Image 1 (cartoon, rainbow, N blue to C red):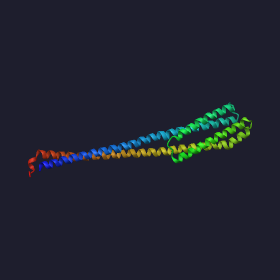
Image 2: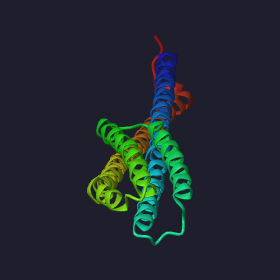
Image 3: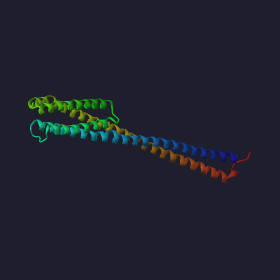
Image 4: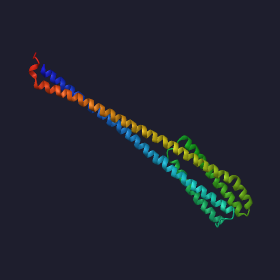
Amino acid sequence: MTISQLLTQKAKVAALLFLVMVLVILYSLRLEKKARNMDAAVTSVYNDRLQPALIIVYLSENLHDKHRLLDNHLSDHSRLTTAELKTRFSEHDVRNNQLVADFEQTVLTRNEAAVLKKFKSDLADNARLEQVVMKQAADENREIATALYNKDGVALFRQSIENLHTLARIQSETGQEIVQVSHREAAGVSVITTLMIAVAVIMGILIQSLVYKTRFLERNPSKFPLN
C-alpha cells in the first residue's frame, strides 16, 4: 500500500536522523575527552616542566654565588667578614630549601625524584662543610680551610651542578613526551572531524534520497495498487 510505503520511507528518514544524532553525541563526547587531555598536557608542561626549569636556574645561581663567595673569602678577595658571610650563606640556604620544596610539589618521574633526593642530600652536606670551612678560616686555620674546601667542597659543588644538569635534561625529555602526546591527541581530533564530515555527507545524501522518494510517493499515489 502507498501509506505503508510512505510510513516505511519516513521511518527510514527518522532512523537516519536518529543515527546522525547519536554520532554527533559520540563525537562531541570524544572531542571533549581529547580537549581535556590536551588541556591537562598543556597545564602539566607549565606546572611540572617550565616551573621546575626555572627552579633549576635559581638553584644553579645560588650555588654558584655561594661558591664564589667562599672562594673569594678564602683567597682574601672578599670584603665580607666571616659573620657577614655566614649570614649570606644562611639566606642562600633558606632560598635553596624553599626552591627544593617547591620542586617536590610538582609531578616527578621516578628518575627525577631519585636525582632530586640526591641533590637535596648534597645541599645539606655542602652546607655542613661550609660551616666547618668558615670556622677553620675564622680560627686562623686558613690553610686547613682552603685544603678542605678544595678537596671536598669543590667536589660537592660539581656534583650538585651535575645533578641539576641531569634534572634539566629530564625536564626536556619529559616535556618532549608530553608534547608528542598532545600532537597525537590533536591528530586524533583531526581524524575524527574528517570522519564525521564524511559520515555527515553520506547521511545527508541518504536522507535527501529518502525524502525525495517520500515526496514522490505522496504526489503519485495512483501508481501504486490498493489492497
